[in-house]
Image (tube, rainbow, N blue to C red; front, side):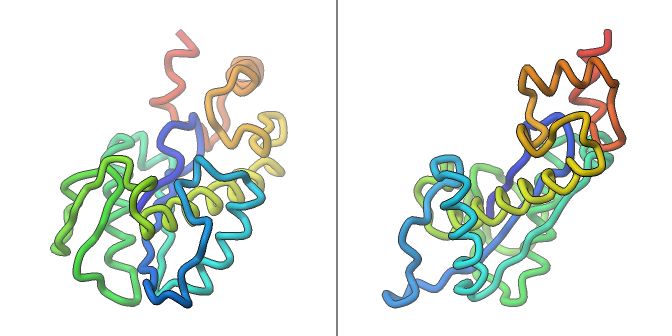
Length: 181
């Protein structure tokens, strides 16, 4: 299990879980931490992972929930849903760094798990590509913010646009409050 989008100023945090086969003929070469891969490679691997996975789940936790319960608890909520909504129930959940998901499935939190675990790396790709695609779609609705370019992260450009136009409904109010003091 891994997430994408804990740090951006807007949009959901996206969590993905996947159970990958370990048969030699089903290993997908090139899977790695999504942050180490180009967008083009992530897109290619995204489709291969969905086709090959024994089971996978992608969950979004929206910015309103993030503002209500905080980003860590929102991430844990998404992770819990990802375990519960897998079509095949895992015997063990390998989770990138986050501990104590409120779920009865045994769990191991692995620091930098997206760089050391095949399944966590695959989940990181699913989460990242799903979130990037979502932010590209949201760019059409909120084009003044240029979400397609920075995906909601706090780039200099995004902060300047945020100050110029003010927040839109998908901005995380708790993440941007310091820009408006």
